[in-house]
Length: 440
Image (cartoon, rainbow, N blue to C red; front, side, top):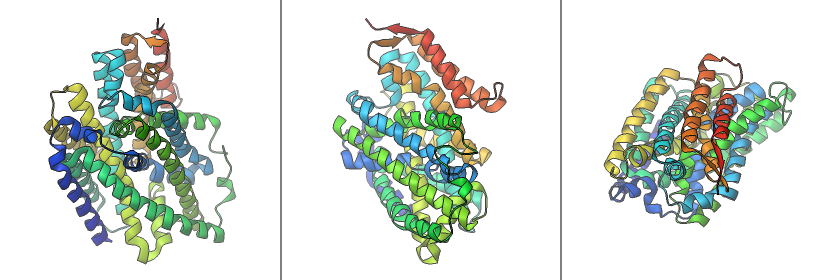
């Protein structure tokens, strides 16, 4: 299995090296690939981005704890992408912007643009930590390798090829990674899990849906906000749409990614239920990789392990690039070139690694990143696209800061005892309502 991982790592590094020259021509070449990607490439890249640690490790852990209703984690993401494709994707691409913060700034001004960019950077650092942790869990739970060394080396690999090739390297490796994911998880692991469940069924207590004894409608609502909204309004998601050749390609990619998200979510739930039925042990976050390799057996184990690593990595590179874009395009301004973006990739990769080393908990890191982003950015961004409605820019900036701050306060201190993302989003909505004005 070590040889398979080494070959895979070498392949993605080569992709980064081959893309370096074209990526260095300008900031747009590095950050959005000169907007030259067609519908198929953007669909595969976007699908790879939205299917990562949350769709696999976090979802499988929630299935073991909550049962089949945990599928709402991915249903929420699929619904968010569907809404994006139907209502926003073409309009996002038509802006010709480079980042989500730039789109926000066109409505609310340069000050709010910088606030949005700062929130993007913070959330993306945490998301990179999540995906680095997820990769560590996959490899360390299925090999004898030392976990901290795995975490550091794989994070360095992600940073290296992203810094070398920018969006071109990310999209091209996404094509490779998505192919491995489809082959390994949908074509191989899923049928094996179905066969296993036909012989050893999952516990009946886990199979109620849409809610269950350990999963209420309030939990459904929290996931629709926590996960659904960031898939409709997400910095790394929008970066793929802004790299598309035209609005039609962006719309098709978003709609296709909604189906991909649903397919991988159903596959992950099936594999997780098979693992529970088989009595797979270990930490909750290890359920998915351990089950996949148990079902595969020694002959298919190398392919499945590489597919699992590709699943984590396909999102890690995108969040790094989104954070770099927010820095060079929005915080520093258009004068910053590809060199500044490369430095930002390295810096944020290092910060994300530090967060991963400090937290070492995939589920909690997942909640932290999504809570910060969903509570701060999403509602002001959606309001910017509403016809006949505007919000005073001062209130828009305050909504971002106070919404994110309230979510973090509830996340760490629990003064209200409610879900942090609901608390933060509620504060955000209240501040926006106070600043609401009707467009003439």
